[in-house]
Length: 301
Image (cartoon, rainbow, N blue to C red):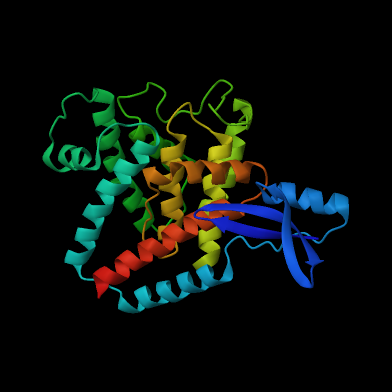
């Protein structure tokens, strides 16, 4: 018997397999399924089996990302008109999908109209409009932080959060003061007294000098860590996605878009990271890094 890693779309799971010989033929039977690496590893330890091979990002995907980043770097600097077109596209898509993941009802087209034409969409709330315009302002702030030479500070993170929830919440830019409970999640975030010190760990990852595929892993770790800490009453997901992009941009990667249709796989990966298995989240983010590289390489050529 042995345990192997399997993938279905963006979902990663593990199988306990037994090899048997029947009627002169060798067959494999799946005896048990594990939803996370932690479950699979615990089973293996209890039953004297070799744990499954563990890679945060599988080698073929890591290799493709490394090569594509090298190709993109060889084409830099990209024409200013190309960069502006890409930035405008990503500004709208990042805003739409990040807000939609959190329940905003504006469509992609409506988000474009709000951001680029200043229109008001009938049937949609003032808060939903503010979420769109605030997120655009947060992206502009993010670009400034990406160009800046000095490290990102706690004050920078608080300001970014304040922009995300400007005119929406009175506690925008302030850590939560009470206990937090996340609907539908097993994880209970830590006490508010621990939040400032825990955020320092996120800042260390954000300001680490790792490059290439190590930067993708670093971005994934800080994404999960911020979501795990849940330092604010609201806006944690949007902030985590922006800071993930900031870490990637510091390493020369283009920004990524985590999309609303993939919300279930995204939340599942975060839950598995809560259980100690970061590989699904890291792989999920790495696939979007490759998509972003493909977009930029297509535009550059």
